[in-house]
Amino acid sequence: MIFVDRREELEALKKLVENKIHVLIYGLRGIGKSALLRKLKDELSPRYDVLIIDGYRISSLRDISDIIGMDIVDSKSAISKLLSLDEKVIIIDEFSAFFEVLSRDEELRSGENVARLFRHYLQERRERSGNSIILCGSNIGVVRRIAMRYFAPLFREFKIIRVGNMPLSSILELAQSYGIEREYALETAQLSGGNPLYAIKIIEEVLTGKTPQEALERLLSPSGDLDIYFSVLFESLDVDERRILYLISRGFRRYKEIKAKSFKDPAAALRKLELNGLIYRVRKGKKFVEYEITDRLFKAWLQHQEVPSLGKKDIKTIIITSLGFEALVRELFRAINREITIRDAINRELKLEPFISVYNLKRGAIEIDLVAFTRNQEAIVAEVHFGEPAGRKKVLQAIRSAKTIEEMGYRTKETLLISYFGFNKEAVKEAEKTEVKLLKEEQLREIERKLGISIGF
Image: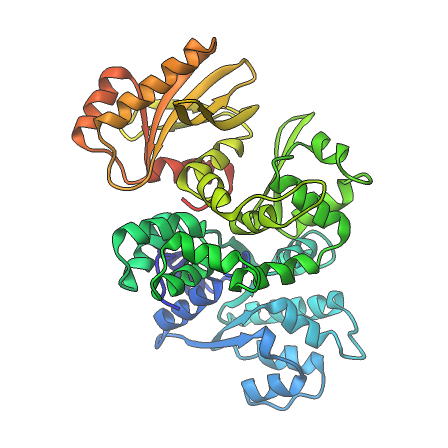
């Protein structure tokens, strides 16, 4: 896989290794963790001797023995001898699978005992000033469980880093590196949701002559690559979890809405889905909790599945309404759960607070990209643009949209123009004159950071 971006994460990892700090990296499948680790190894060499172990390729203690070139008689000696290689930076990819092999030992018998023993030898390694150990995992549920419960003592030994979606600008760069023209590269960036695996799947189809939309339709159709990928994930869930995912994908995001349409109390299933990273929760008050599906393409796949009581959406409609840049911006505004303050692209203050509803408005000839209402029924109105830097016409469109909302009887608190790739001089001049606030990639990513989420800007 071509390595694109992740420079911030890469530089942070290099500094941690230089200071002999142990690291735990986690994130969803396909997000680019393994590519990041391979790039890290390349940049650390030849200064450091780096050993990478793929947990999925370890099926017995013999495999570990062959990798480290030392005789191993049991799991205890495997951990001891592996962590005695002080001169090596050791990276264990998919560490939960690696720990599972070690837990088959008759003496250890459980992941808890493996973790305790691992911590013991890790502390000895630290006392000897051994180089960094880096653990990496895709099973977010496992990472969170072990961090919260019996593995917590082990994970206090690690700096924990979450790898989220790649910025849209990086997906654009990735698509163009394959020779795809800018128009299709821009569309690929939007449709991928910031996931490099999905981007590459779309790119592979585009290289055969399809448009990005046609590529995604093929991938999500029965027996398409992503249909198979998501089907395997979905089949691993129990019936209550599946029902909840279907409901959230259809727009039933509030807890009370999910409960009303569930066969039993959904609290336990919601907690499990959240623990496993399939959904995230946005709490905007004691009685105002919303849920959203973490993976946007998985959400699109769910919307396309036929459910007797919920129906299904046409894939073309899903792509247009749910997978563009506008939908991504609306998801970001829904995720705002407290008041935050940022500076817009020309350094003016903008305060954003939790919104009780966020949607796009289509009524006859009227089309507004984003309307977000506060608890006081004041509106934030935004024109959203993805492509070349926005011009003056986009500022004027934002103003017209705000006037439309006011004519409907609401007060417009702020008018925004959101353009991922920025603005030309005429747009800036008009915005200064009319007080339209300007947001680009930098501001969108700042909102993400302040909320502690990674949607993909």
